[in-house]
Amino acid sequence: MALAPSKGYLFADLRPSKLDGKRGAGIGKTLGRRFKPITGHSTFHAFRKNVAQTFERHRIPDTEAAQILGHKKVGMTYGVYSPNGLRIDQKRDLIALLALPEV
Image (cartoon, rainbow, N blue to C red; front, side, top):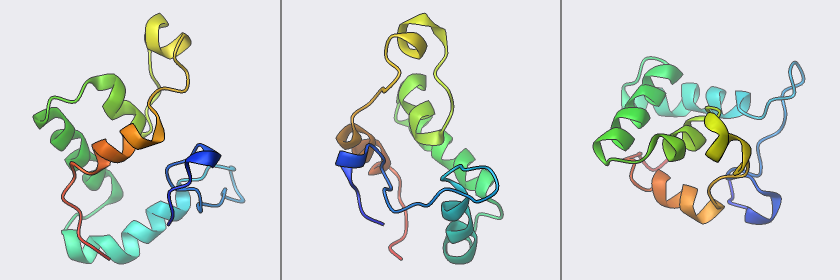
């Protein structure tokens, strides 16, 4: 999948689900088929847990980790006044902290 900052998405090639219109279902299926046998994670949420732990060990602020993990930002400061959050290059730098296998 290609990075396309002009579209505002980290993974611009993801298509919305026919059921709920969310864009993450495809990457979950890809993870299941390709990454589980390689990484040893039994579920997608086990993988997310590992991502969260990695970010915490690198002392990444909650507001930044939340944007990668797909959680909503809370509070007035970031949740209301900074709805777009990190730039795509900043998200890419955070993802680079993860030790993912090449597929």
